[in-house]
Length: 310
Image (cartoon, rainbow, N blue to C red; front, side, top):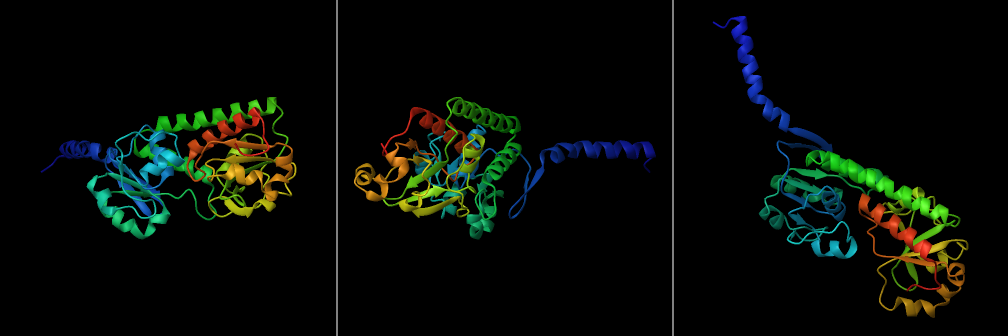
């Protein structure tokens, strides 16, 4: 028969033997349930570029990503190292390719909901959507970074990334204010052809950049849940006081086509040489795209405008 003292010792021994297991297991709620991890993931697959970006910011290289080659063209930074496997497209990744990599964590979004259960059979799956109806892209991308930081034991690095971005935004705003360049609204556009642009709306990721730099968005109407609207050049005409910032890449031959286009040449920002240009940034990405655009936008505005794209 156990005495009270012996029973207490036995219970303590059992609890101590279980403590490493209990301490290492953790759970997180996500859009399609609960994710529980017993250990820190070492092999992670990302099925959208915002998740890929977040992992790289945390100093973790994914073993596989969707649309690997496109990432280096459209997102660019943070740079994707060589040797990462391509697991197919973002809209239809290969389950076989993912399974072959033997991941211990998959990061995806609600667009992959039909394959969610199949992904969970391969590995624990974390579902978070930065872009969906009613979402706030900056807040969701920060949530993703912080949560992945917890999962991957990189919490300090996640907080450092956020602090660095905050510092960058303050610095770029100070540069613009000192130069007197916050006085006009900004129209952020991507050209689809010589008559139509994708113009970025107040509900998109880029609005965070404009707000934090002390700039006003020339386009005041909400766009789709991705944060943009497709409009003809004539829709920019009423924005007489604005500066038009063109985000690369440009369609082939655009510069020459615009030079002979009455839809373009008679726009007030064109006539007054208030056309600016920045390198490619990914408008559907995560936090780093805020930093990337803030620096490029500030540099471009301080460099001066032109009467056409370059």
